[in-house]
Length: 98
Image 1 (cartoon, one colour):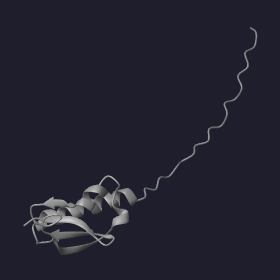
Image 2 (cartoon, one colour):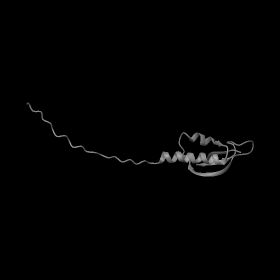
Image 3 (cartoon, rainbow, N blue to C red):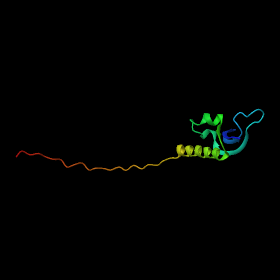
Image 4 (cartoon, rainbow, N blue to C red):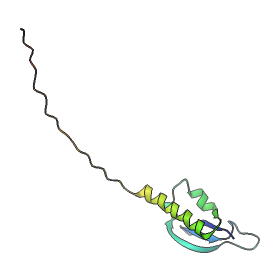
């Protein structure tokens, strides 16, 4: 059986079974995640909605962990500090005839 990521309500979830099911066997919820669908990066959203197949539960967990890392990087704020240096104006130079 395949493990896959998909959507359970408004959360990303891991299911056991093929997307859409096979014959009468529907995918079943294997694990819930803490990732709200609203936080999934736009580029990953279509794949999550249709279901990403992985070979094992561990692979599915790794996919979810990578997805969480992407979300964390996108939402982390980096603080920068700016240093202002004031330079005193140079003294005027007078050229006098010799």
